[in-house]
Amino acid sequence: MKATIFPGQGAQFVGMGKDLYEGNILAREMFEKANDILGFRITDLMFSGTDEDLRQTRVTQPAIFLHSVILAATLGDAIKPDMTAGHSLGEFSALVAAGALSFEDGLKLVYARAMAMQKACEAEPSTMAAILGLDDAKVEEVLAGIGEVVVPANYNSPGQLVISGSMKGIEMACEQLKAAGAKRALPLKVGGAFHSPLMEPARLELAAAINATHFNKPICPVYQNVTGKPYTEPSEIQQNLIAQLTAPVRWTQSIQHMVADGASVFVEVGPGNVLQGLVKKIAPEAEAMGA
Image 1: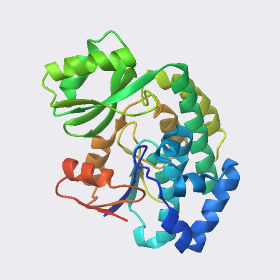
Image 2 (image 1 turned 135 degrees about the horizontal axis):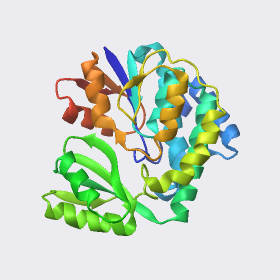
Image 3 (image 1 turned 90 degrees about the vertical axis):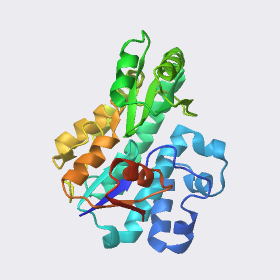
Image 4 (image 1 turned 90 degrees about the horizontal axis):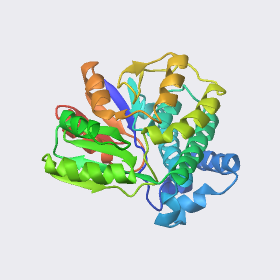
């Protein structure tokens, strides 16, 4: 069985999507529609902006979503999946590809999410760090003993867990995790503490937008970040999407569940190849490739 997977924040690069825009009429129409919906020419920032432009959450998130969804649209039935999933932001791309959300509504929600998250980041300085070479349970144990806001944010693959929290919390956690045997504890260049309680104001803002948006039954199961399990019921999909902002991304568990349910080929659709690498670490027996 074939699974399509969609990347999240961090996969952006200057020039992303330009080949699609120049080489495909459907892609050009979708990009131009996106410019109209957003009220600014995001294509200019994607194709010829700076790294700094693309790092702004309000640009990064819709840019990655557009690259992923438009690429999927141009490929059509060639990548028709039996199941799908997306990493954090990528979950919105997966939902559009599976027909649960329209392109227009997906873009509006992604932009609302980006703006709400950027606002939450500016309200309280916070950050994230990647912890390498330590068992998940040990990371959880160390974090539980720190008297600051710091939580597991992304279960990316065995031995690779991203943590999220206050500046002081992350600093303390990195020191203690290295002392506990982590090979590396790398602070990340991100705008704030995504997938942590510090995103609660953004979650409330996004909940209103999601609850006001129509969701269809997807054409295939969508494995959602909050549990790593498959969903097809629109009301459950909506609630999981809302919970995702303050809950960890259970990517390891998502891939494990997809493999258990019969996925043997994973196709990454969108910029970069990070997810292919994670699949190979989580499920070495599976085949992982780019679209």
